[in-house]
Image (cartoon, rainbow over all chains, first blue to last red; front, top):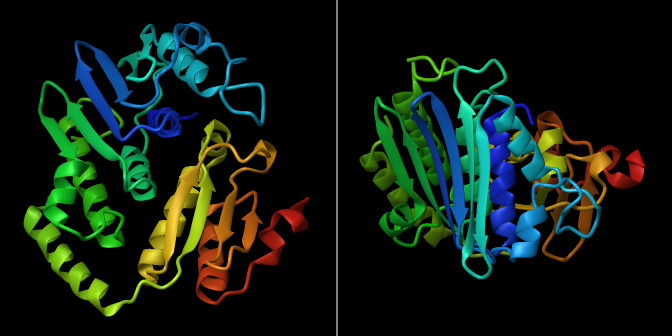
Amino acid sequence: MKDLSLHVMDIAQNSITAGATLIKVSLICCDGFLVFRLSDNGNGMDEELLKTVTDPFTTTRETRKVGMGIPLLKLSAEMTGGSFKIESRKGEGTSTEARFVIDSIDRIPLGNVDETLKTLIMANPEIDFEIKFQSEKSSFELKTEEIKKYLNGVPIDNFEVIDWIAGKIRDGLKVVFGGVLNEISG
Amino acid sequence: MKSLAELEAIRERALKEMSLRENTGKIRVVVGMATCGIAAGARPVMNAFIEELHKRNVQNVNVTMTGCIGVCRLEPIAEVITPDGKKTTYVKLDPEKARRIVVEHLINGRPVKEYTIDEVE
């Protein structure tokens, strides 16, 4: 996984598999940390699975015995001197948090976050997404539920609507993280 | 900056187009998007499908994603499922191949044999 946006895609896929109808994604720059949080209202995990979920030999899939998604994200955060946390309650949902030290040489770049969110929304029109970016400079929020209300019957996976959403997210990333993260110009 | 006025214009346009089209059977494109697929480059492939379909104004195709299809070494993988239930599995994709599949298979109805799992395996 060469950038954070691919991890976002991967962790969101877990929420989709867990039957979530609402997925919240936030990226926050604060006190030298870049904090990525993703929470959902899916099936959640029981304590036993939760305990072993950061082990690469734990997976829910049936095609293979390894699951690398969560261990890779954990490793990626810890390599910068940051941390990783996952909380879950059976039947209520799961919340994942990875903290990266912004100035660490090992911090992976943000990557193409707008493409990740665009494809997630496109492929899962029935799921609501709440997206939040925040830094000391500015903040940005987008809720697909509000956009759906506004569209009033026009599907959210309409190509032009999706394009508009992706553009909006790109604007948000630039306003919030431009000059804050060195991979995004100010 | 993207404004709500722009979204409103898109909505109006989409409503007009929707009333013109009867809902005929849709083709489904399903892209494998588990850790294996993502690491192999599935997201740009999916985006290429979306952008090419948009560019050519193809409306009868749904692009969705799924988890691990089971043959991780052949990722990125996408399945094309036509309304008659026929399934074509494409493997080792990249954005260029995805664009070709849009033109030849999704628009002209001729599967791109050389990218299918039967040819590659």
